Length: 500
View 1 (spheres, rainbow, N blue to C red):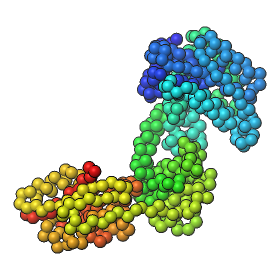
View 2 (cartoon, rainbow, N blue to C red):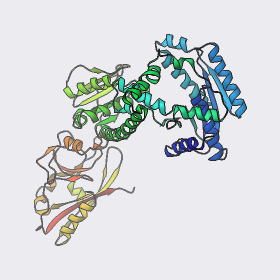
View 3 (cartoon, rainbow, N blue to C red):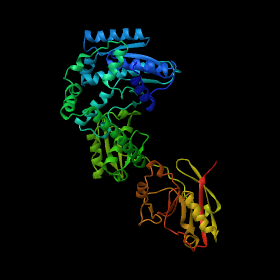
View 4 (tube, one colour):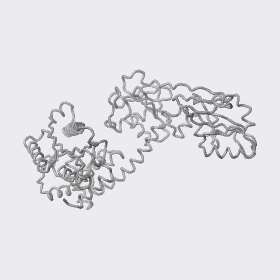
């Protein structure tokens, strides 16, 4: 075993937290150098790092495409596993028949059936043996080829990051090891690995990239194009994670998953973030749409650029009629100020889920001390008291420290209108003038600007006079009856979650 290659493999496993002691690993074994290397390195890892506490099962899938050659691959895998003391599971499938029946390419059909076999094997093991992961043998060169292929297709930033080290229960521990290095591991172990003859046929796009295009670019430009593509992949992955995180925040602030499987979107809120984040958030919303309780686009597969563009343009135009169609029967419709993503046959796909109205507590009750119930069942205790002298400015400072869980009003101004003040949650038509802000705006717009998630907005306690909001607890006070440095008499309103 080449120590430098093993160390590189170990570093990848540890850095990306791919495997841990007690895991059951289902390793894909085709018989080629990459997959044989994977099994050999996993065996070494199990002994040297986990004291044998890593359980390896190899899985060979015979695609039944290459006739006798495929059967010879299967025989090789059986002999290899027997010599190396590795458990082997063999599966077969009619890939050509499946491809024809489902109107898909041979490559896509092979991948689908192969991963179905992996998952079937992974779920068949008894419980209590640690988690089960699927290990596949994509290598460093595969990463570069995938990035180039995605560039040729006009991929987004998501595609430029290439192959991930880990996705769900699938891990790829060889992504930092080159194809030449996997062959070195096999030769060093005395294993005469198999060569798939189709890898040398340039009928497939990926083979053309591997065998012709990348070698040509490297030769003509005198550069290591694989290294360049991997550098691009790393940068794209880092930036993609940042944009993805920002888009998730936009989604949280502008969309709500409804009980009927639809996703409700505040069009204004999502568009205020610009096209890049808006389209990302729409993509995330599409992945949340359910049919019969299951995601229509499982793992976000099937959501392409054209689809998100159609939905984005529909929302951007703010059209009151018609609908935009995504795919698989999913459409986007508008109702009121909201847009709805859902399947066509859902009854009333544009009907907004009604929120239970919160109670309204008059200020006369707050003065005594009152319990306030939000629509989501959260209870608060709220009380007010009169302040005078130096305690006024001290209270103002404490309010700032409390994150606006309390508020101080000038008593002279506030006392004249307090009989009109109530404690409640938001309502249609509410207006807010932020303290030290430039003018006022609808409360809905203020929530959007502050990135307050839609699902939280109906459960935020606030003080209001009819439709004028004068304080939003835990968020911001208004400019109404603010306390100045000379104020000697004030009233403070405090709120805290009830301990009941």
